[in-house]
Length: 381
Image (spheres, rainbow, N blue to C red):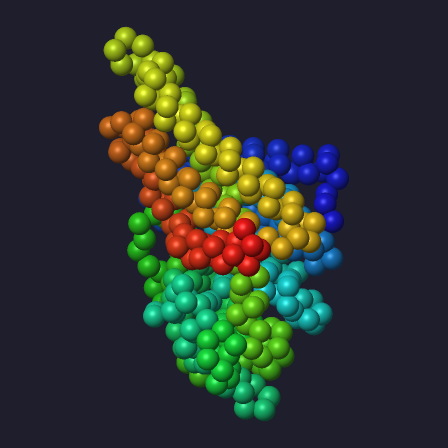
C-alpha cells in the first residue's frame, strides 16, 4: 500500500537532505578507505533504509515499486556504494523471502532484515556460471530431514558482512533451470566461509567476495518454495532488482548532468563560459534527453508493476537503457570537464568507474537484449 503523499514527500526530502549533507561530503573518504563509516550505516538503519521494500507488518516501510524507484533516484545522486550498503536488504537479498517465503520464514527473518540488524546476500553466480544462471553446480542433497550443501559462489555483494544468504543450488537430476532450488542459509552454519573481498575497478566501499559451502547442513525448513522453483524465484527477484538499479542509474545521471552544468557555467575558454559553446551544449542536451527518457521508462514500468501487470520485458528494457545511458552520460561528463574530469579531485573519474558495473550485474546488457527480444516476439511485436 502506498504511503500518503505528505508522508512520502517527507521521506523523499529526508533522503535528499541525507544524500546532500551527509553522504556527498564523504565520497572521497569512502573511496580512499574502501569502507562506509559505521555512523553512516547507523543513520541508514534509523531512517528505515534497510526496510524500504519490506511490509510494515515486519517493520519495514512497505514502499510500492513506484515509491521505491523514486527513493532510489535520490540515492543515485551520490557514490553507489552508499546505496549498496543496504541495497541487498531492499532487493535481491530479501525479495526471494518476501515472494516465496512461508509465514514462519518471514516472521523469523524479515523484521531483522528491515531493521538492518542482519545483512543479506543473494548467492547465484559461480566461478564458471554467470549469465547462464540455470547452470548452477552448487549442489544440495536431501537426506530425509536436511540438505547437505556444497559449492562456491562468486562476486557476491555484501558477502563480507552478510548474516543470511539466499543460495541457488541444484537439488535434482533435471538439467538446467528445472533442477535448481532456493535456500536460506545463515552464515553461522558450520561449513560456510567467506573469502577476502575482491579489488574492483569502482564502487569502493561496496564489497564482493566468494562464499564457500563445504557440506553445510541446511534444515529442510530453510528451503524457499518447492524443489525446482529456485530459478523461477531468482528470475522474479532479478526482475524487481533491475527496476531498482535502473532508478539508481537515473539518479547518477542526473547528478552528473548537474555537475556538468555547474562546471560549464564557471569554466571559461575563448573568453566565455564553455556552457555557451555549442558543442558543449550538444553533450549536455544529449545527456539530459537520455536521462529524461530513462526516468520516464523506469517510473512508468514501476507503476505498471504496482498495477499487477507483467513487466518482464519493460524491466529488462529499463535496465538495459538506463545502465547504458548513464555510461554515456559519465563519458560525456569526463569530456566536458576535460583534464579536470580525469583528475580524482573532482570526483567525475570516480563516477565514471562506478557506473561501469551497472551494465554487468543483475543481468548484463546482452542478457537484457535477449529478454527484450524474447518477450517482444512472444507478444507479437
